[in-house]
Amino acid sequence: MRDSLVDLVHIEDTGYSPPELHRGTWKRPLVGAGSLLLSATAALLAFQSVEPSVALQSDGGPLSAGLRSNGLQQLAIRVRPDEVPPITDLACPNYSPTFPSAGGPDCTFPCPEGSRTGGVGIMDPFPASYTETVRKAGNLIKSIDPKGTIYLDGRGDRVSSHISFSYYCCYPPKQLQRIKDIAMADQSWWKPKNLNLSYATCAIDGPALDHVSFIVMLDEESNRQMMQWVTDMENRIRAAGVPIHLSRRDQEPYHTTLGVVNGSSYPVRRAIRELNSQFPPGSWLQQPLLKGNVTFWDIASAPV
Image (cartoon, rainbow, N blue to C red; front, side, top):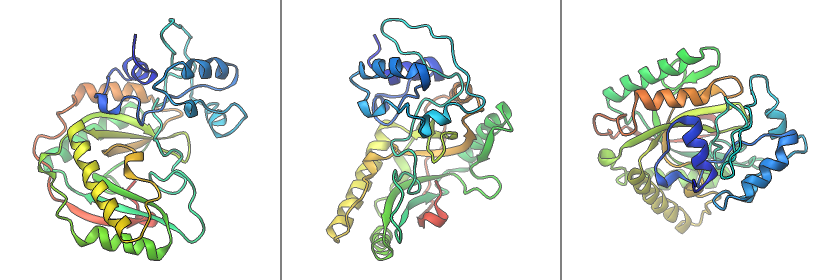
């Protein structure tokens, strides 16, 4: 028997089971609405690794409304005693832990008036060989459904490939400036040489249910190292008297974004299967990461 609903969704719907680090943590299963909700909710709660809060409302709120979007097609239900089947054959099965990002990237709730979200991004840390791989991956994403592809990072007016180191949610200007001063004062923590990428997957980021990102995750050891660096940074910020509203450990694990698609029509699961087939986990980087540019952004220039 599989140990969680997350494993079921990933194995059967994307064709790839990610490393143990990401199981039962940030990936939230997509469930249906209407007459199927009660049975799906009961089944969800039967899995200990899935939090009760994952069961979603049936009162006509944003989720149930989103699931009625054109393009979401229901699967025939074939239930085995130890499984909960997916409800749609198109949608990404993974919610960002900070969905719907109402306060900006990786910030769950809307910011109070007079406050802003900011963060630290590592811009252009990738060697030329990775840029070429991303170009090919972007071409694959767009070839599957050109109309459903909203944008690809590094094309048009989109920022180039990057890694978002930290997100600081909803601070008044003086506190956000203090955070920036601390974060940018010393960048010696950034030691990218031994970091590596793992597999491609998707995340429903919000604010709309159809905003689906294709992302490449850092591998388990690289994520652990980045989390240690950002924890040290958060401790320095707290020591300066500024609270951390939402810790990086409660946001998405470290990744880099390939692009965004319309999740209500784009065949997300097919694309994930093809991405991980053409670019196997661990093959994204042929050369070490570079220093790149450590940049502080605010909500007006956030590299999502």
